[in-house]
Structures are given as structure tokens and as C-alpha cells.
Length: 42
Image 1 (cartoon, helix red, strand yellow):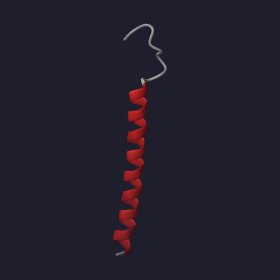
Image 2: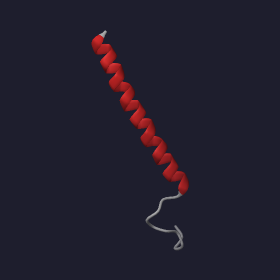
Image 3: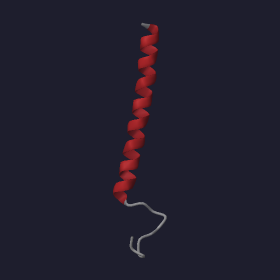
Image 4: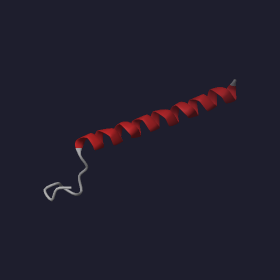
């Protein structure tokens, strides 16, 4: 940890990874809801 690093801002790769993880989780949640609806109707 360098003193010159801004403490309140994560690195670019970490921000991209977190955004990708959030999108993946959202897609997974929506997919599970749709699957439950289809299984419930079937």
C-alpha cells in the first residue's frame, strides 16, 4: 500500500470486476425468477 494511492478509490480492474459481478448476479436472479415462473405454469 503506497501513500500516494487514493484511499477512497478502488483500482480500475476492481471496479470493472465488481460491476461485472453485479451484472452477472442480476442476470442470474432474473433468470431464476423466469425459470420459477415457467416451472410454476408448466
